[in-house]
Amino acid sequence: MKKENISKKILFWYDNNRRILPWRKFKSKKNKNYYTLVSEFMLQQTQVRTVIPYFENFIKKIPNFKKLSNINDEQLMKCWQGLGYYSRARNLKKTAKKIFSNFKGKLPNNLEDLKSLPGIGDYTANAILAIAFNKPVIPLDGNIERVLKRLFYLKKENEISKNNLNKKKSFFGFSKRSDDYAQAIMEIGATICKPISPLCDKCPLQKNCISFKKNDFKIKPKNKFNKIKYFEAKIYNSNDKYLLIKNNKFNFLRNLLIFPMNEVKKDQFKSSIDKKINIKMSNMDMKIILNKNNRNKKIKGDFMLDKYNINKIILPSFTKKIFKTISKH
Ligand code: SF4
Image (cartoon, rainbow, N blue to C red):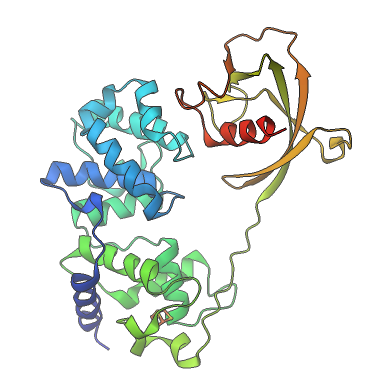
């Protein structure tokens, strides 16, 4: 089938099925650039339905690049609180600042300059080029990868390599509506070619799909395992208040309030511990021992947490989870 017919089919499907998403409701070109940048940062490692309310609130409070570049960190974190991966928020602000210092207040429209901005890697730069600037590129996200793997029935290690998947993207060709086209293909992956039980009867690519013909939709999983790491959290408790400290020790949750913690070896997981908790964080499975201590020391920059101020301060959900676990015991 000719490439233009593929793009016509996909765009016809998109025009009739696209989701109404807040970052698609921009009123001007400037707006579109800002909405694209913020949504792409938020969508890194987070699902669309989780991002929607955060995006709406963020745009209300921080409506443009100027405001973002001048926002104080506390207000910024308040808008991001609960979304996780807080380095994204810090990078977003740094990016806004750099847009003013290096690019005269305008989001750059080429790959090299975009990738020079904090928090923007290859995928995000390509997504911005396609969506904000209508450039003829198709970013390779997890959704598009899955569509390609099924379309071409790719199972072997060399077939599912990034390199090969990037080559296979040529199947889609290009469209003058590059902004819609990139989003349309991602949307087919997200809403039709789902990881489990794809909705092939609704798919505009059914006739082109080898997996459909073979009735085999299994996807070869990525050969990627989360690292298991072990920690001890020290729970200093006094009058129902718990000691937290500002984290300037670990690379995750940097500058946010956490319980005092150390990384430990697997064999330091002792039987005398009070409680264990497992938390997934970026590419790490954290196994944390929670050991209660009586408070007997003062730590610089500390903060006393109790159940009355837990919702009033900016806390990562990581700390809230540990607090909930210990306050049950
Ligand atoms: S036909 Fe089914 S498996 Fe093939 S791309 Fe469409 S939804 Fe995915």
